Image 1 (cartoon, one colour):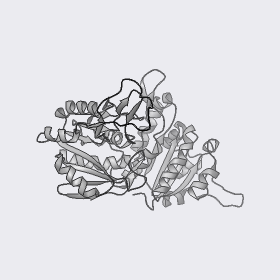
Image 2 (tube, rainbow, N blue to C red; image 1 turned 90 degrees about the vertical axis):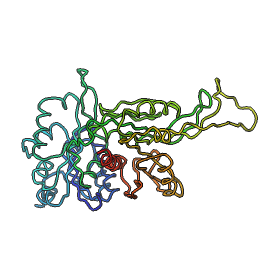
Image 3 (cartoon, rainbow, N blue to C red; image 1 turned 135 degrees about the horizontal axis):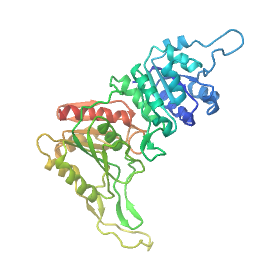
Image 4 (tube, rainbow, N blue to C red; image 1 turned 135 degrees about the vertical axis):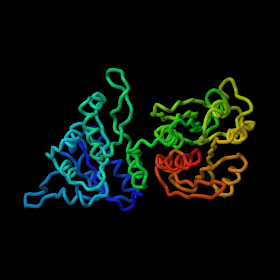
Length: 404
């Protein structure tokens, strides 16, 4: 979706300026051409040499690049670009954009821009909450700009607020959704009033107090699905195995579990009151028959662990499913992918299944990207590799069609 797109990346004087390198990397990786325009204050935080090395283009900062009469044309940049992204964007730059204070190359480029403009604010939490900043952002929205809301935090007063710039991969996913035809700025409300159960992350099956059987799942895909559902109006119960990430949307209730049995109990308790369930967790199929009360000491050259089957969460929810409920499963395969996915779809009474393969390098466990196929009884839709946030958007689009 970003292949061949021309992006002007504006960088301002924020401590988050170092993250612009990660934004450039993600954009270039997806085939975009990036031209950096940086404010004088921005150069205090990151050097043009670093940015130029990443973009393979000279960085634009001043109106006049040399003393020979040559100058940088903000008008040409405005015509060249398919989009302008200002990340990070300080409170000062927000104010200048809102009021047309064209005192640097970035603002004049913004005022000449014919393409859509995306803004990722980054500032102190109290500055972000100040009425002046909020008014400036509302003005920019009124001008048709796309504001990528910063992450949640806490104000000095103790009230919940926002300020820290959104993470680079989410910013790039936002642009991808825009170019895919989805309006990333409008708060889509197609799931308003729906209750959705999502399972995410791994399960840990204890061997003794310090050891367990587990897997490499990071929970990124499940958490991305939860955020997407909540963004679109749903109330989400996220039953999560042990992960290092956190949910941010207030409509997400996290139920933390460790083992498959705990996840089974939580999921079966919640499912009857939900319109849909998405089973994204990487659940252990087996657990040790016995858990040692104390750390097992090394004795001899081998050790046998007798395993017993865990409850099958997907199959049980498939039996519980009532008319009108939608059940979505995941299949992570290493071989015979389509055949195995179709078998799981039928056996567990799923409405559709999301297939991904470990043969697609750089996707699946612990990665920021995924490449999926959505398989149902009526057909199969294959998707290109995308960030997991964009993949979540595709999956929830399919879910939304089935709920309604």
